[in-house]
Amino acid sequence: MKFKSNALKNIFLLLFISLFFSNCDKNSDDSSPVPSDKFTLFRLEDLPEIKLTVPLKDWNTLLTNYDLNSQNDKKVVASFLFELNGRNVKLDSIGIRLRGNTSRRRPEGNFGETHNTLAPDWHHCHFGLDFAKYREKQRFSDLEKLNLKWFKDDSNYAREIYSYDLFKRYGIWTAPKASYCKLTITVEGDTKPAYYGVYAMIESIDEDYIANRNANWGSTIGFLWKAGWSGSFNADFVQTSSMGVEDVKLDPAKSKYYAYDLKTRDTELTTAKAELTQFISDLNNKTGDNFKQWIATKIDVPLFLKTYAVNVMVGMWDDYWVNGNNFYFYFAGNGKAYFIPYDYDNTLGTSAIVANSGTQNPLQWGKMNTRPLITKILEIPEYQTLYKTYLKELINPNSDLFDATKSMQRISMWKGLIQAHISNDTGEDMSIEDKPASWGNAPFYRLQSGNNQGGTDGNANYFSTKAKTIVW
Image (cartoon, rainbow, N blue to C red; front, side, top):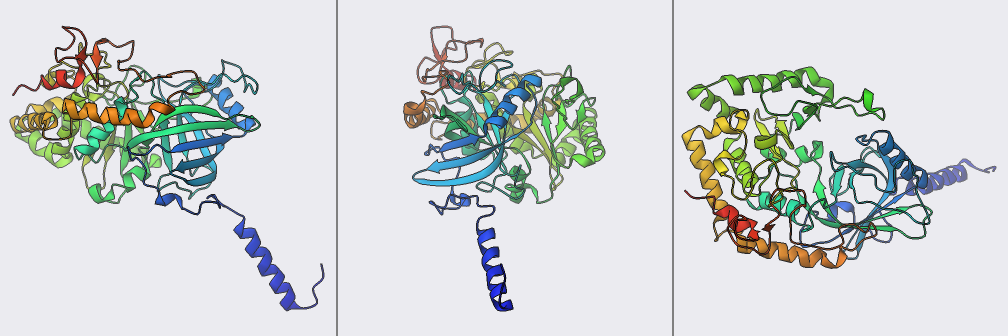
């Protein structure tokens, strides 16, 4: 095209630039101009729907990668649509991956199979969403990541939601936020989307989680550790042999796992390890008044004990005190370290390892000689008194916390919210039933019925049974 003047040429150039940029990086649905940051997430009065659309080749990559190494954290691209109360937000390029440890599953078919367009065999599994994977600054409601968790082994569809809600009600601001959502997945080319049913929508523990709590622990990003089991090592705050940055490859033989897995500032591993090692050394070696003075400067002891009071009341047995597992530990910019509760699906009567999670003594919840972070603190008389005070506050019938009647009312309300949406295309977990996981050691516990006898006389209500253990 030839231009007769520079003016016309410049006008054409401006129009071209305007049209080009108006069609680039368009992340919200034009039909609904509500920006994503206007949604208030994690409200238990809401049941939003998340719709993921995945290209066929990427869905098959997700399946193939699972077969190569089920623990891989490789992500594939998807589009994301969030719908709530007639409003929606669409993001056209996010990353999705499979999540979970022993609970991780293949989302479709059997080993070696690719997507079956005509007769897909969908499976419930956990998903992680990464809004910034393919667009660096992309966020959804100020979040870079979001976890979607299937209600594995919880036919009540309530245990994890209840636990995180109780943390929130009791002012434990370190706990991640959680609520319900519906999940639908479409593999491009299919004539029918797959409705995966009701999921837990859970805040990811990452740098955005840290930043959203800067008012509590300072704006400097410190060292965040994910703690659990790796081989024969666990996060007991005794051993220091298994610290590093997890590196999960498609070849399992080349993957690296650690009991303490560094999640922030991973290029500063040497400094992070030195800080954690010194903390563990001081924790184990300081005694008497020296330990009492030191621990008060290193962690927020009242917050930690409130967290543990909730842990014990909900029957979290796969935790630090019992199993050296399932928590995060954060060295914040204010000089203190924080225990971050995590993973509460196997609670409220679904139990193992401890003999009976409803009747176990709250002062002897787990191992007494190899869990110094909790046991040494409880050896200090005023801290043990504080812990007992928190336990009593939780069961106070005048507080809307762990009281049996009020707890049952909340669960009933949530059941009313999700009941009509449970049936799904996986054919799994198709109804709400008041019972614990079948593999647990206390099949008699119920959340909305039962007595307070802990299984000695028929079905027992977990809340009223647990309250009986608070005897001081």
